[in-house]
Image 1 (tube, one colour):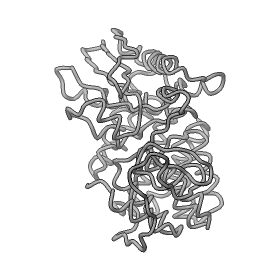
Image 2 (cartoon, rainbow, N blue to C red):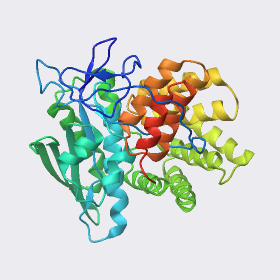
Image 3 (cartoon, rainbow, N blue to C red):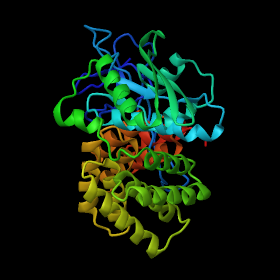
Length: 393
């Protein structure tokens, strides 16, 4: 166990070095068998930060109620494709990702980032090991079987510590009912974890941007291709998003998808040209116009403002807006940490970097960005630790 000497908060994850509340270096708490020392100096990262966010897991329990935090953290694993057609993989991943995104909007719930949660796809890792690695207490897993226009979706919410099944359900519906199924699953998780989500917050987590099942499937295909993080995947993703918009011209997530793909392409230099940047700018503007509550749009605009326009004030506003709408956006936390460090807000930068690593412990690029933020903030101890713990690509 570790403890913050300032706020006295206890942590049960020995991988953490800094308090998540105030950035103070942690010390070993009562009962620890070894002494933690913060004396390592000067680390060197071999390259500048690239794109995605990442973290180190954290567990905390109240001494008075050891189960009080059992329900405030979750990982949504990629759903298993039970269909005969392997091409339906996009639906399995897409459904899980949409549920993850919906739950991520809840303030009082820690949601493991997609990069880390989906790294267990196709493995036989035990639920308890996944929970320990990601620092979550509950796991949502499921399977999808699609046959023509019908779909069978089975989901289970499991206590990662003891394997206890908290909730489960099977849905046999028409594919057009996919939106209602997502809403039912999301609200069932909220109820099972006894989360208090009312009013606008409740509406936000079940908000629909289209009722067109065909457009929605094309959008999920675009996300599936984009998440391959390859040149070919980006090209195919743009094509699917454009097909989506041809059917549903006001579908904001598709515009946000176009912006995100363009942002990746110009940032990594695949297609670094003014036309691409302008295309992203137009897509971001349209997405925000159609859906002011869509967090990823502000993240994309923040990158444009910061790295293209040099509008650092505007970028900071967009990072804050992103995290206000989606407090579990590990990527936004990582980018925000770099921005905070550049603006001289060192303690806040460390906190944001630590949060990014906590949400996405298995992200290589996110760990890199978090490490850079700590380095720029003068936290060389944390930067070195991040480098040493960085997952292998």
